[in-house]
Length: 131
Image 1 (cartoon, rainbow, N blue to C red):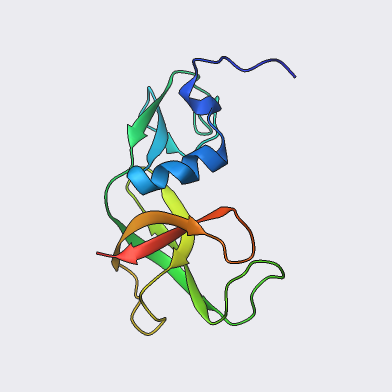
Image 2 (cartoon, rainbow, N blue to C red):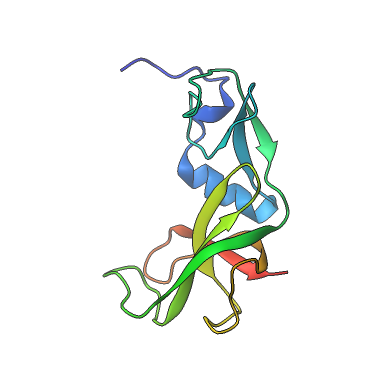
């Protein structure tokens, strides 16, 4: 395995990406306009290595969601809770919906990305809050 280019924006790790959600977040875009989430060194669509960090849109729309009744061991969430895949235009992000019950979430619900500490660990998790 070779050393990563220290100037490549796609060399940023997942933890740093989640930390950045508190300030609005970002995604990786190649010169051909394909969006992906870090860490990336190469565009998964076209193989381009010409990547840049772009601001994540302030809001996205729920593309699909699921109400969880049995939480994974060590996750820290008390079921039931809602996970969702949210469309932010160039990218889709998966996280936990906050401040809405499953009955209040529907396809197209507008949310904003955020991060908060997992109840079972000190790690941050991706969350979505209604707009």
